[in-house]
Image (cartoon, rainbow, N blue to C red):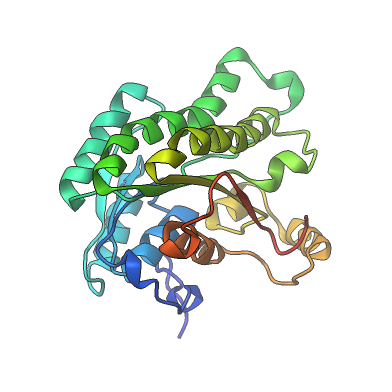
Amino acid sequence: MPQHQGERNTMALPAAQFHDLKGRGVLITGGGSGIGAALVEGFARQGARVAFIDIAEAESRRLVEQLSRDVAHAPVFIRADLREVQAITPAVNHAVETIGSLSVLVNNAARDDRQPLEEVTEASWDESLAVNLRHIFFISQAAVPHMRRAGGGSIINFSSIAFMLNMGEIPAYATAKAGIVGLSKSLAGRLGSENIRVNAVLPGMVVTERQKKFWLDDAAIAGMLEKQCLKHTLVAEDMVGPCLYLASDCSARMTAQTMIIDGGVF
């Protein structure tokens, strides 16, 4: 049966069940589309109570409608612009009030705009850091009190292998993604004594609709496949299993680590 536009590829989601995630409070940023939407569905199908923050209203509401038909707890959409620091704590608090508790935070929201070196301005640099890095700290800061009340938790920060590829057209984005690794290690050092773990996921070239619309063509995808050990195009659902593992008690002694999911480029 062909997949209709806007529907999730549920067959690609992990078959494994992480029973400790059932009923657990999960907050995901950028959950309305792409990798974020796959994560929302993946956690919801584990029986978690999921809230997600996004700025895209139509896509997010469509996702909630699709999933509410066949998951135990329909995900909760909260609209907020994470570039506005003052909006972050109210959004996190609203999420926790709605789902009841918070044990897992997935900082996924990002935007990998390209820009030639000569065209980078102070404003475009600040915009990229606001979209890709700054909010991760402030959402984590807002989430920590709720995780303390839950007795601990797992923060999963999305970085990227992009900063290791010497890609000349993404200086600000690469800086942000490298910074996420450092931030994750710092937060892990601060929060470990409170049973809050912090790890980073570094995806490779994940082919989403947005990537195909703006950046990727068949030649680019083929070129990356040539570099990968595993000759399979990465899709959003490929990021779900690693995040379920990092959220679950299966990784209870893992923190301050980076997990590369790139098909074997590095």
